[in-house]
Amino acid sequence: MEKVVLIGVKRVIKQLILVLGLCILWNCSAYSQVERSVQLVKAKTINRNLALQFPIDKSFQGSKATFSDAKILIDTLDQSIKLQMTVSAQDDQQHFVATLVFIGDMKYHDFSESYIFDNLKLDRFKVEKDSYTDSQHIAKSIKQSLINDFDELVLFNLAEINSLSFRRPADEIEISKEQLRFIWN
Figure: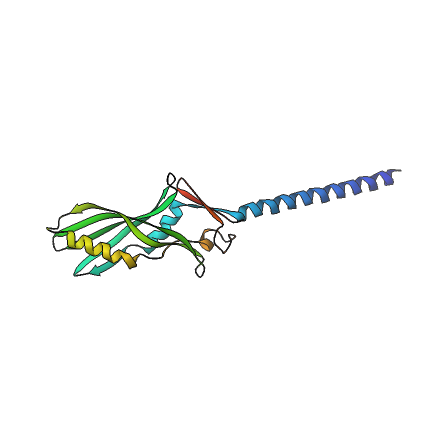
């Protein structure tokens, strides 16, 4: 009689272990599916990537300018993403510094599997310091050089953010405070 009870208990324990194992596997696969379908990218991460691409030195019409301190601006009120940078120019004893803000399109670039900031348009040009006797020519030269110089800036590469993320454009991008949420359906 004792042997029959032990065999019955062993069978129940095996079935319980099987059911418990299946529940654990189901929960893990459901969790990983959620993990792979949503990716948060913080502004800090994008700014670190932009810092690798700057400063950029440009020369035009006898003047040199340095573009630096690029950072992303995430605006939750108007649901937009902007790019801000500083430009400084120096000629002899004259010095010029301005803050530039661009609007543009965030697009997925298939070849590099990256999101880029494309079709940049100057939204704001604020002069911070100006010791030039006539800075109109330097400001105009800087604005004209921006048309092609900062096209297709890489914001971040998907593979560098998360090796499990999809290698295609997100189906939806949500803008929230200091971060972007990429969603793949």
